Image (cartoon, rainbow, N blue to C red):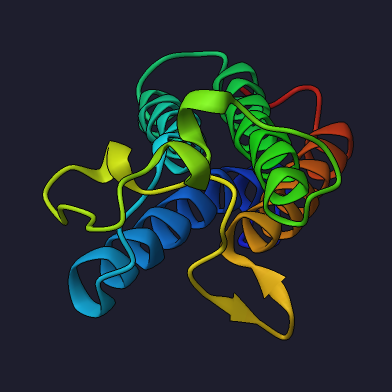
Length: 156
């Protein structure tokens, strides 16, 4: 398999993107005190699944299928991020139990489910972290699917 093989590049992305996004989430949580809300966790679960599926692709044929499933999990996380970003930007209403109106004034840092889902604790270039997850995950998933479409059909 050549280094520029589309399947190999797709597999790399299917592992790198969720690892990088989860790494960033944990750095922001433990390094900067940006505790996740319930919808933040919803975005993390598909990324964990994508990592697992990407690892399975190393040992279980057909490799392209596992990479495609990982891409679907990355896309799922991105779509949840789009929904969460919409709640943060007041484009639509989120879950009542997750809103800032339901959260007491003093938030216990150990209980992330007390963190409101409708307030973005940090924005970069005016985009919330959920919005960045949407952008990065969606573009990565589309790229993986395009690379899979270009793969050598005779390979695993």
